[in-house]
Length: 263
Length: 281
Image 1: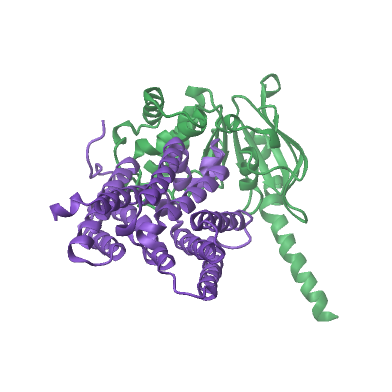
Image 2: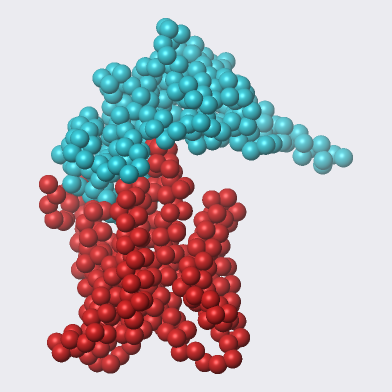
């Protein structure tokens, strides 16, 4: 199905990180327009690196990465604005003096470009984005006065205010209670359907997303598996990524130590 | 007090104080929110070293102040960007190095030079018409650039990586901010002095920070506080014959502590309570 659709992000044997310490290695992956993709993998598997790469913040050390048919290095500001991004943590400083509407208006700034001031039309876009996440009645509330779940909604609204083609969410449910986690994922699934957005959702919580995504991408430095959830979430694959592989890594260390002890 | 206003020197000082107060309080908003407080302090000492060198070798002091100030902020920004060390460490090193240079240049001067010390402690009451024109010109430049790039500056103050990810040229805007901080410091040197200019940048924005939850309102509050304390400080200074720099800074500090005491942010907050501030339409 996805073959017929326009490819938006294409990794071609791409590696990222520092020479000698690769966070991601030999990744070949195509994300097509309108897909809802979940990215999973253990801690340190390169999920956030993948995210930064897709935002054009990291160039591949090897291989190629094309975003909106631009080589990563040529990515212009207006291209970046087409990816609405929700970072892993919201704002650290809950006292940062900014209202909900001011926060969402920032989503317009990249899209507007330099030298242009935000006008009434931008304000309307921001208010629409707030309405999409059900926060329109809070436009003048201080961001720091909101609960964690409400803040995530506001940050999703900021991403929407960019009028993006892609929504990229890096562990959007971290630190939220179980009901709020569910609500945030529901909201994302709803936006995917309603606005036809391409959604990339990075998460630890496989159970939360497995029934909602079209495709799961399983990372562990390399691309381990990519396909419909039923194909990726097979016991043997999961054991390899989350269980057996880790055990083997630990064993390896023990064996090396034992080796030194005995010699 | 009113008869004081009839004097030319008094009109010049009030105009200089209001300009510098306004400029420092606007740039202060971004400095406080982006966490660049120490950069302001470092830059002012670097700029002072430039002034001292200017007097020593007979070059224009303000031009060298700008050169030293810019070199300091750019090196600091570059070091932070390369991730070599934290911003406070690199500025700490440059801060003390430039201070050492300043003291060295002062020591190399064979005679006592009151004008140089004027740049260290500030002497708003002795601002000349020509200096006022320089202050005015540079202020218009800095304020113009702040206004032109205000949306990007707010965004990088809030979250620089987020700003970059959403298409704002965040690195360039960050260097623009550092440059504007250096220029502001140089503009303010003569008026409040290298030691106290830092306070003029930090205090009005920090005071406003206590009073509001809105970026726009915060900026306006900061400007009102900055301009009014600068003007009132000069009037107090002239009336009671006390040094102008300390008068301005101590007045601003008093208002800061009052704001901390009566800050609406200190009141217990309910989840998703309406914002405690003037209405936005």
